[in-house]
Image (cartoon, rainbow, N blue to C red; front, side, top):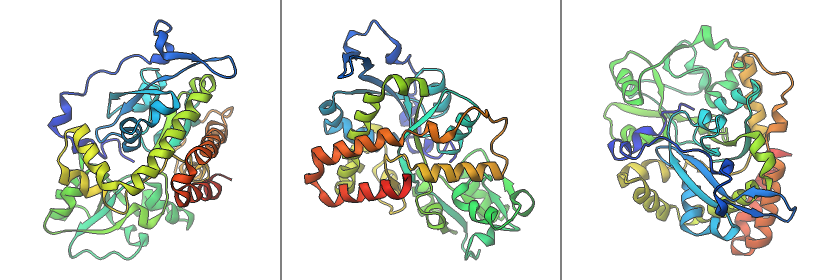
Length: 361
């Protein structure tokens, strides 16, 4: 997923708040309030810095607003940072990031970087493929022979074609533009046939004459893994209890989101100082699906696709991706969440357990 997917959401409103991110609190031994003893007598940080993308992370916002982080004893500080989130995690500027897709984290891990996947944010983004009103589309095979504003990194759209034996570089003309607005205009002018548009541009798509949505990424591949939640692997090993507690709070936040989606729109509008219609355009769309699950099996399938299309360069053979996906910690968090709050919404927690089993075991 492109890093700019949601950056237009805030426009100038967020610009003034995009300050340089600070150092990770986990390494600041002078902050006495950020540490406490755990049951294993280890000292784990309970104060965590989180890279906040331009559209934020609604699960984090809910967990803070509803006091879920407080209840599990974790403090989360969001640091405004849209671009360069993976680099910020890698260098220790922040502890966690969750708005950088799946391709980049997996690529970073495979190259040997100190990075790990500890959960998720968007399971599928509200990402439409648009075309002119007179353009026909029936299946991904219609992309073959076309000019398209996208890249072969789009697992959700193209992995089926690759599995069929198609060579994307030879059969699709990929073109890149500065932003989604330019892509939309290129479609309308007939310069390209299709464009994959980011989640945060849904309002523009809905209000542009002569444009139509031919499909969504999640219609082609349900549950394709849009954005993963990542941290440094070394940090995770030192703070496993903290990671588990964060996952617990996020699972509970997802339960809240599913029954209070419109309230969550208001929460994000207020937090981000954004236009309500702009946020509604994607957050109320059925294709916008969030889930903190690690979805290990789906991530591994993404990895296999990346290998096939040349997305893994100079891999570190000592690194096994499956060892950098902490689905075991997530499962511990899910079990404890079920025990603590399962009675609040039995259907939700039963479905969460089933979803984990289908996508991790």
